[in-house]
Image 1 (cartoon, one colour):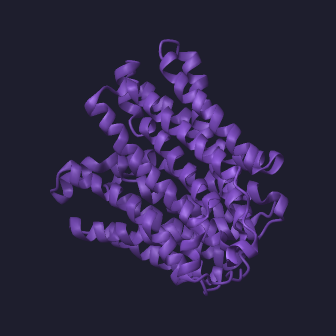
Image 2 (tube, helix red, strand yellow):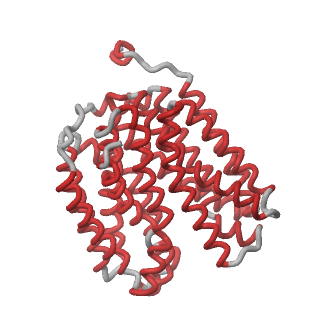
Image 3 (tube, rainbow, N blue to C red):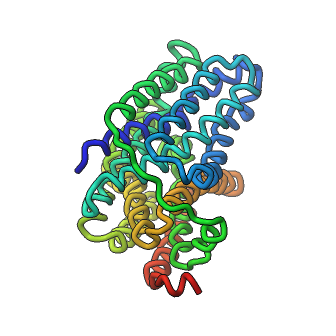
Length: 387
């Protein structure tokens, strides 16, 4: 596989780290900027929402720009946004910085995915996409502990300085090592909207949304679940997150390999089935730690394994609008993260955190239904599309 894919994965890692890097130091941010903890938490929520909405819009606006040039320009703006966050003396300014980095970050992730798929042979495309998502999943897993460690040692602004430095290194690597990548033909707004009228494509995007919703229903509240249901202390919670993170990063790569070897359609169905079994099984393993850890590894690895297969499936199903579908899928994933967190919180308030795995599991089953529906639809011919 082309080594340049790993460079693009590094870009994705740097971007992804920004999303959750202040998750572990929200109390420091709230205290320093004199806002409530809940208001400080909006710095993460708003980031996710902007991330979800911005990528399809920005991808459309920049559709005619050569891909390497676009990535370099976007990295510069992303760098400025992180410097602004590092400098920000008020809550309003850091919120503006978060909006700026979310918007540019969303475009960078889509560019990384589409460029990775274009620089490798078709037989390695799933693996290339999987590598990019290993970078993203790694950043989401490591973002909180990195932010916590550096923020506590040097202040909450320090993590943004680190990201700024890493962004500069990414810019240098992209400039020196990547070749130019021509943009794909521009789709009209009407054609872009028509892609979601295609039942095969729409249901595939819904699969990503429902899958992440089900996953986050539990994962967003994993700490209270471990402490309340399993009686774990802080040390054990840290161990669990380490195990989860390691498996999740590996899972992104596994998903790409499975997609290349067995095909996207079989991989998607198989991954969702096993993932559903794992999340429904979790409540029955909490009294036996070794069994729980095994199920946890399966659950965490497959949480990211499905994404490369989904991305590859969308490229194959709609090659003429591949960039748009990658962008929309990225949005679907982040909307799923936001909605899953909301559902998980509702379950806790109305019932108990012990119910979160089961409730999440039903969303996974819904994802299985939409995946099956999508796969059994025929790919529209050019004549049908023109009609």
